[in-house]
Length: 368
Image (cartoon, rainbow, N blue to C red):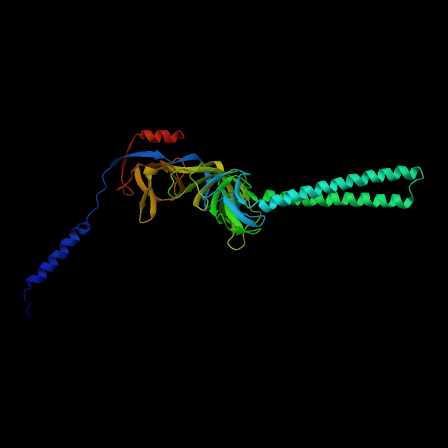
């Protein structure tokens, strides 16, 4: 039997033998990443306040539609939209001619009734004296007593009529029931109005009433008198108020608790504005926190890098409240651990060379 020479087979065999002699050559070794000089800061417990973030609407403290209380022609309307008025200030005047005449007539009727009553009283006294002297009869005395009673009743009726006439005259001058601002002018001078016809809408906007909705899970922490911070769209100011009213029950439809705060209005707030508010439920809470520079965010995941045996270790964290230069960590790290500042590009296992803490971190550790 003859065997032929195959050069290609010899080359394959030689390659296999070579790979058996050097088993580690097929896998390139990954070099250890170089050490990196970093700054670190400790995870600390920071004294902070606990506040509930809620939304609501600013409402007028008082809101009333001022209506005519008597009928007549509206002679004058002294106010317009935006005018500030004081309590008791005259807003409008309804034709007073007929009411002044009625008041004069009722006053005259009262005077006449009073005179008749005085005359009846004198006549009764005279009859009583005559009756004692056996000059006047018993029937004369009875008649004088009845006349005196009738005259006194007429006085009371005249007094009531006079009071109504004077009240109608007073009500022909429409006055503001409280201090506020005219939000709407409904009627105009020259119109005939009847009792109940709206004339103007008056609102009181200092303080404003802030109506808020608190979720059921947060409702146990809400108390009267707690501080409320308020912000509105387009205004950089933060306004402060106090929780003044709390509903006695949670609303079944949406499991929300309605609360109201009184917010002083220096002039920049208006009723009807949507507001974002924070109810401070605990002024002496604590939070596990790290400097803002220690937190990385990528694809919606927040991470920090801690130092473990001189090497970098990535940790996924959950964050909460935030300050000017710090972030609360609700899970992922513990107080006392060291986090790397500006950890971008670090890999888990990479050696670290620790520098001194920056000046702002010194302030952080001291509670600043």
